[in-house]
Length: 416
Image (cartoon, rainbow, N blue to C red; front, side, top):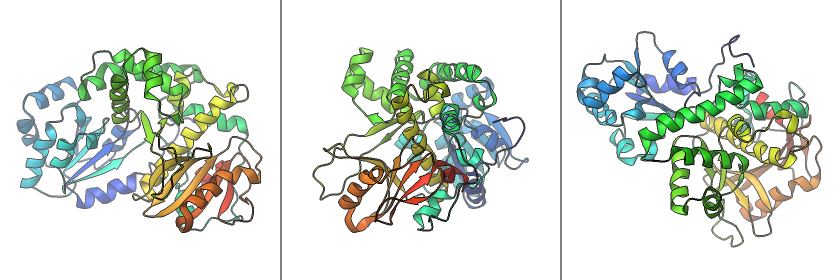
């Protein structure tokens, strides 16, 4: 993708437009370098923009948060607000005096929602909007409507992909990831960018959100997780490999989640189910980052199939998360695994309704590929709505006699 040659509209733009029209404070949350600043700067040109990465603004805000906010214009964008968390209380006081919509547009590269005192301070005054690196639907300039179409029960075998992807292109999408900057570079230069990216986070962001003496240990943990993405979390094993204690590893895992670098997918279970394993899975949020840290390239697609299979699972989890964030905020994502080691890569729920997604790297499909979804359907009972097996083929196909379970090409997933 040539990021210099075209503008890519972000799917979060509609949510931002709606929030600015009726909410005093809007905060874009997401990892560094995912496009938050660019999107924030593109809002109303009359809005003053300032970044707390600027040393002058940072020092002024840190020294006197209330005075800093009081001197700003009525409509302002503050980038990287997590660097001075005390600003949130000052913003609350300002908004209580003037509740006009759209006054403050904030961005944060650490999850302020995991800092309860700060998140609660603006309750009723703020809307939180998640922004991620580019989704494949955004790259394809499609509206990303697959998930909503499927959940609405409108997916059928008459749907065809707009293009047919070879397995090598699927591997390229996984290793590219979604961060804008490395998508404009060669593979070698992109890998260098990712390593510098991790280094900058260790040197700057970790100091803002946590008291961590050994930032290099956090970087080593992220690299280790890049080799184990889409696996059950085993803090003891991670601690042994890193020569750290388990408590420290758990603290570092929480920090990586706060910085939007990893995602934990909890295990789905129904109250009456007794044979489910409830350990969460860990996913590195961007597979371009994971591929760089694990030294994987598209050429490894065949020879390192198992490792690519795990990355493919993480890749699809992130694409589902992105589409869910702009289509249905009530959706919750889980994984399923029982003691017979029958798995479903992603379980989506809304209220009591249950859907399942299985991920396959192959271009062919068999009825047995839907076995995990059938087990999930049996566990969910009347609450099961439908399931899909994503594969690298070209047609939407039924998988067996249960019409609720279908095989769907990846290209349909992000081009619909």
